[in-house]
Amino acid sequence: MSHLHRFYSETLDAESPYIELSGDEAHHAVRVVRLHTGDEVSVFDGKGLEVIGAFEAGKDRSVRVRVKQTIRHKPPRVGITLAVGGLHRDKTQEEVVRHAAELGAARVCFWDADHTQRPIKHSPRWRKAAVEACKQCGRFYLPVVDSVSSLQAFLESHNGPSLIALLDEDAPAGQHVAPTDRLALIVGPEGDFSDRERMLALAAGAVPVSLGAAVYRSEVATMLLMTLAAYTLGELGPGLPLDLPPSSLCEP
Image (cartoon, rainbow, N blue to C red; front, side, top):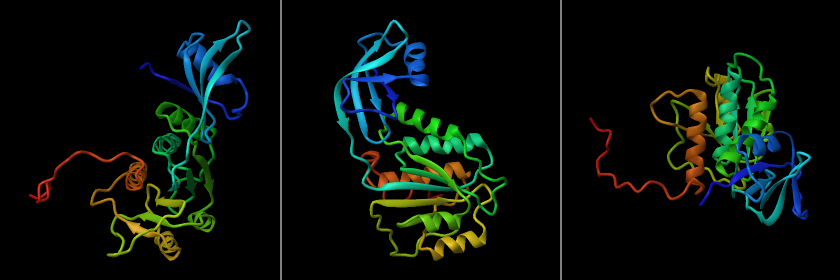
């Protein structure tokens, strides 16, 4: 089966017989992937609606898709929010957004941390990175990407359970999180949480989790925690077909 090229349209109309593509999407279709009239493509709106149709390029440089099939995809049963302390490099923040979109996050929220090296500046490239990631991997829900002034501001706005990644601490035995329709995953900045932020999160009910003995960069810790959550919630398939021996493979 040939690759199905995907395009994004924020104003997708399920009732229209044609979907117009413009701007970057039209350029990508005509100049980058060089589609021909009749090629089958997918267009999605980032809110669960997908249209399958035939690509058509007009003589006046108009680009549109003739609708053949309309599909409404169900969202993940638990909407995951990644709450990440502000990272120093813009490219690193874009990387977090891109991978979060690939893994099915509902929201990415950057917060100004006590140890953040510079204030967070909202970038239009965050949304672009999310759109590109969803197009590439076939996710039909575009994550919201925003920022708040502090961890406390995020905790006050989040109505639901949360996990916080701490290097030296894990949840007490028997303590579990019961996600409803949402779950927050909290990761600190490059300089880690301050003591004040750690106490704020724990006092707000965030359950600590450990990612093991290794010390990861913030963007890596974010993706590890997101991957573990998505897998546990059944969003990443059945897992690897591995039969482990009774003893640990890591024993000396």
